[in-house]
Amino acid sequence: MNILIVASENGGLSGGKVGGIGDVVRDIAPEIAKQGANVTVVTPSYGFFHQQAGAHWIDSVTVSFFGFNHTAEIYQVPGNTPHPDVKHVVIDHPIFTSYDPARGYHQIYVDDPPDRPFATDATKFALFGLTVAEGLKKKIFGDLDCIHLHDWHAAFVLILRRFHPDYPVLRDIRTVYTIHNLALQGVRPFRWDASSLEAWYHHLPYQWADIADPRWPECINLMAAGIRLSDAVHTVSPSYAEEIRYPTDRPRYYGGEGLEADIQSARKAGRLFGILNGCTYSQNRGAAKRHFPELVTLFKEKILNWAGKRDTVSTDLFVAHARLTDLGSNAGRPKTIITSVSRVVEQKLLLMRASGSRGVSGLEGILTELGGKGIYILLGTGDRQYETFLTEMSSRFDNFIFLNGYAEDCADALYANGDLFLMPSSFEPCGISQMLAMRDGQPCLVHDVGGLKDTVKNEHNGFTFKGDTVEEQVDNFVSVFKKAINLKKNAPGQWQQICENAAACRFSWADTINRYFRELY
Image 1 (cartoon, rainbow, N blue to C red):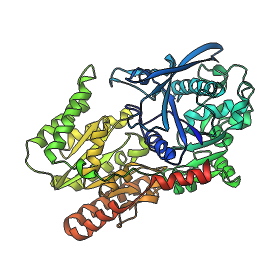
Image 2: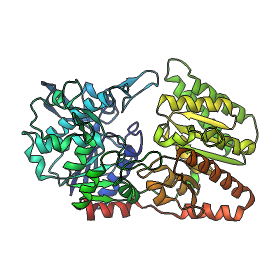
Image 3: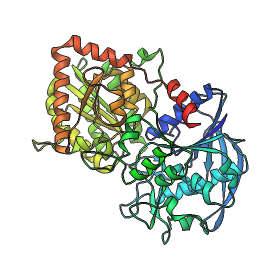
Image 4: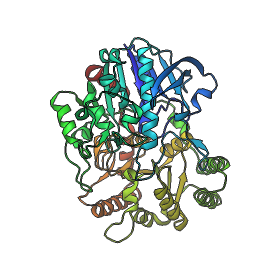
């Protein structure tokens, strides 16, 4: 088979990953190829992928966008791990480029003001989808058997496939649509805005009911369009496929986010499949184990690297470097190392910031319980308000270090060297971090939802909590944390068994891809 993967992220390219989409796209491409398929992964270039060493120009496409002709250039670029049957392709156009001087790197996503959510990104991916459709028409990606589209950013291809008079050839190719996060839906107006369907695609003869948001009828909902217009709909865990069938009732329950009727319709039509993501395993994970001073040195060097890309030394990096310097002056490994690798957003960290019944945040409760018995290191970047909260907490508590950035070697070090991994997501379509921590024998403390429920079993290979209100969830999060660290201290045999059970778990990409071919492709 010849399969095209269309996505906003590709972790198979350096700098191509922000979250789970990048991880999945990186991992599934070679695994699909192992089944005898040819795979092409296409993303925007974001202004820099096409300039990397080894990139070469393939072709160009010209499309009508905003009522004017725009030409985009298509390049093949080398992946981090070459595979003979996997091609990495990027499309370059000035609209795809966004550079953040404060952070010192090109952005994949842009945070727009609250009154214009998704505006910049929706325009960017509207053009990206159009250039992909034109590339498909010109057979730049070859003769395809299946187009696998990921999240709302790629749903434009499905809209053009259904409605655009220039692309009837796309209707002969099977389409699969993967939902990574139903909460992010790419809602934009139909008209009367520079970032709207009728502004992007002049005179497109669309059917309102096929792409309209069920709550705001004057808006297009790109996630809904993906669900409605694809041949198969895929969620990244079985539990998440069940959860999103029901209406959201926050904070007790995160469900269909307004699209539960579309999910139910896909299920009744036999188009909905919940397949757990996998994890990569190797025999050389022991090399990731480091002495604690080596960890401190690694993190300090990374902070200096991040600081060197910014115009000024920000508070977050200053505080983190100061904390690491203090740690470096003390001999020996802390008794307990708590870790997290996470996007710093509400979905992941609401229960860290929210207050429990004692009137203090979940993070303060965790750090108070940890006390002088250990150190908590959190790696990640995301929303400014959450980054500010974590920086303030690190300035108050000397047992907490917030590394405000992302680097694969730092993440790998935390997975391999921690004692307990925290992942209190309010909802979680699948999650990859818990699998990576478990792979190295690090038990995880998680909220009992979605893919976390499918992978972590309480007091067997990790620890779980739940609750009907945010306050209950925070209280139970802190309570289970206290129980876990006491278990580590007072019942080392039981703790070791939990660690071994975590390490023994296997969430195989081979099993996942076998189901792709049986149920999706």
